[in-house]
Length: 349
Length: 193
Image (cartoon, rainbow over all chains, first blue to last red):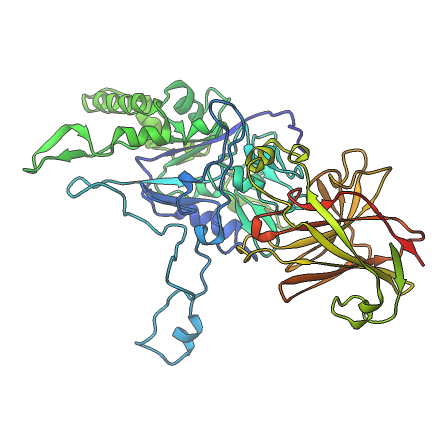
């Protein structure tokens, strides 16, 4: 099962971080579609975190994994624990709704308060000191890597790449050994403690096969995410990533060839002590953005600023027109089928 | 070793009937790091100790219908909640399969596998952790933790003739799973009465 089938296209996502409002609609769209079964309560295959932040699992950026940039060998990684993912809480519904405790009891996760954590626990904390505090939202999912270290780490060959370039797991073959979770530099693989298999984003492949965009993309109210074939030069994802170079992957130095890309966030201006505006210094430290998106982030931000200047001066910008996405369906690439129109008589997606 | 012919609740590791069976100590050692199946496992575990259970005690019995193997070994440190203690009996499933690497690509071994909190599995192993789930075929298991020691009875249909058996033990508190096990260094011949 470790064979790589002949690939016909490479699906890629592009998230515009200047448009993501952190509403978690993508997260919830994914959640209600895919992770409502046993052992999946704590699983958020799609999640949005506030950056800078510890995110999910807690402290994932420091958990290793991926490949060593110098030797090319797999780097040891930490296997994220149930507590580090957190969430999946049980609530005191019985007490609040049926316990005759009106006005006294309130809904509260059960279990110890100490060390509690969850998928979006540090929302909107960010960093920096007032009045120059800053943050932005970072939607994260499986990166469906071209060189997936999860796949090569697995002892049983449970993972493989599809013709669409999606990394999928055969749950019959998965033994729950979790080397994939250790090896993944993005820590976006979850363990199902009830069914004893690891699980992650499946790229909504049953929807893809029916011509329907993934739930995270189709449901985004901010028109902030594109999907398409990275190898199709006419696609928005190809143009944003390859032609205009305004989108880049997260932590590409891990060497796994991620296929989720981000248009980096522009910054508000800094305020001086006397509250005058410092137009020269971005509030989000450029070195921080570089630590996430690599050195290409500076050029990307300059391109975006230049395009905005052009438009302000009355000119036209294909890049901004694309990113604004006046026509909603342009976000969906070739996957424009309305899921409401599908024949579900056989229980299809 | 001899498979004792016994009557009683042999599926229960605490059953008094087990007092009538011969028990032998099996020396275990870690599956070699170089035999681990993926580069990730070899890199990540090269500097970590695993397969730390040094020995297990094996007793074998049959009620005429089924073969029962009772394994006992000292429990490791406090469980970390992520990985569980586990044990397997191994049998060669093709040719002279190597026991110390849990079989290899061409010479598989059959595993009767028990893990704390998880039902018994029958597996085919073609190297450390390179396993496939098979139909249960009557394989059963039951484990007890008492006095800091695990005792587990693995059972299955009695084979027609004696056959070699090996043992693998995983200490969950040390993140041991897949090929990160302590295994028999040689096959032990089971002799049916």
